[in-house]
Image (cartoon, rainbow, N blue to C red; front, side, top):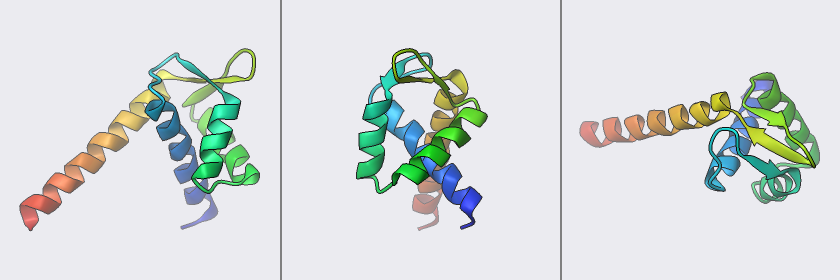
Length: 97
């Protein structure tokens, strides 16, 4: 994977963290929560910063008030699309087996 691919994958991890916390579009989460969860997934500070920038540039998240990040519609939909794409791949593998 290239550096850009890794950054994108890490940005997707951040979105997964937010959705796993029960967030939907327009919900906010403390940046510290994202940071602690990202560190548990193996992202270091540099990886996290690059992923947050990537996610922001894609309009998946926005800076919120009081040290929060807001999950946008685009971010929530990106996660749903990734989920359903993965489910479709799993179904296709079961059919092929």
